[in-house]
Image: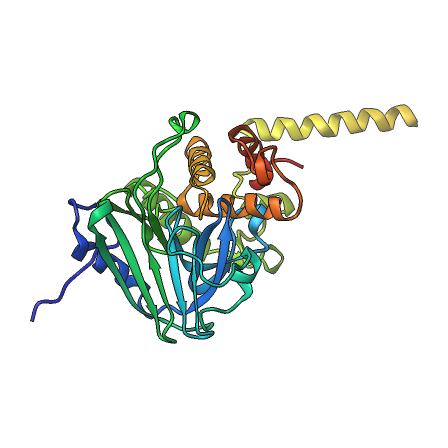
Length: 270
Length: 65
């Protein structure tokens, strides 16, 4: 038996129309529970799946985000809701038959049953327009299809703007970007800190060894400090500041200097 | 249908300010939130133009009081 491996820690750029490779990358979405739909700027539909977390930007820390976010970018889409026996579509996907709904209703309408896991995520070729679509099936029977259309010619003022993908998936592992045309890319999430050099790792290991020999300060969140040191040393330890130490030999004379001045002041008062 | 120009403008601003895909996603959501609460741009339907979007980045990142 051969077992397929997808290394999500490496960047990947597809060969033209590599649908099976894309299908494999989409497997990370399988089993993730649907959380909610949100309409972003530009009327872009986004679907959130998996564990929820607050936004990382200060201005969005009050909002929740799924660990997996599917964004349809500017592509037409079609949602078949099993929950409410309805079919919704973005303008342009199929002709409208019985009215329209607004953004808020799309977000709150529970067209996909909450917590319903993704059952299938399949890319498909749309040959007439040279694009890759996406079919997403949820366990409640709902289905989303993303059907990129032909690229519209740029308005003169848009020529300087970058092209955007036909659809994308943000995940803890990275960013999967599909289109335009039959190309797709996967970029793994950048580590927040660059990898350490061996010398840095050795230095940190040495500090940890020294810290083990010290006592623990509950005031400083359990941070260990050296015994026999004053408040200044504790602060330095907490904020990672190396305390300034006078050079050898100068320490004694400095002390004497202070004593000398104090003595003089007292003598004046008397 | 989604407005492609708006999405491309967000993408352009995101690239200019070195946003990660996650930050770009949140920025787009933030601009939509601004529009919905009445803080609208000068374009039709309250859309923001490119320069107005650039001006929103510091407040989005919490760099402006």
